[in-house]
Image (cartoon, rainbow, N blue to C red; front, side, top):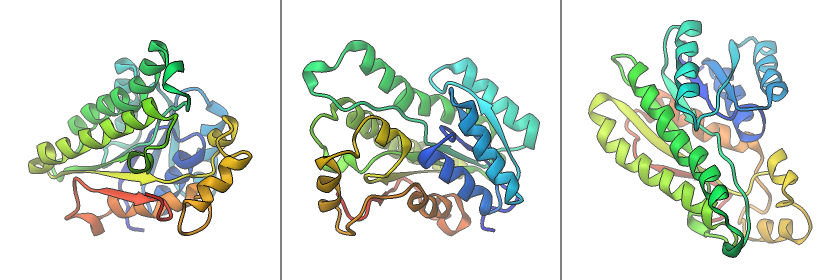
Length: 248
């Protein structure tokens, strides 16, 4: 119970990596706010699983790219649980396409969620962390290192998130607020299947490029997040932890 009595917000917690993180943090003892943008059913399942295991959780709808929604998310967290200790910025959107196909609308869609959304949630979190500080964990991608073709907008947005995390680790360190990044490798999620990333020859290519010889599962990302959120990592900030099976 490394996170006993802590309160955490996990954005994008209705499915995939976000749902696994929310459940893993709850299993470690934290009370969890499972944020979602549109998948109410998925968020309810996340919360139900946490409660069935004896944990405490609520689902809160908010589009992290909208400042009003973000303020409401954090205000409801305080109203429900009375404090905030951990923020996990997992919400993210992506599309893989050649540079010629990128539109202005798609650029803004990805950057508004992946970069602006994280900035807005971090602004609200630092207002509500207590005198002992808090911890922020931003979920990026191992793609910041592998820089795969057809991922220009998505990968660059996550690279921006990493740089933002490095800056804020220094800026917020004097306030005892730690900021770190977890960079997952190719992970088998509903979203990845939905856009066809894990279909056909692409799967073999991804597995062949991973020294541990398999795709990641959402649960593989939980341990690194719990570690960074816990007091075990009290001397760790400004770091990028790759959870990628060695694919870098």
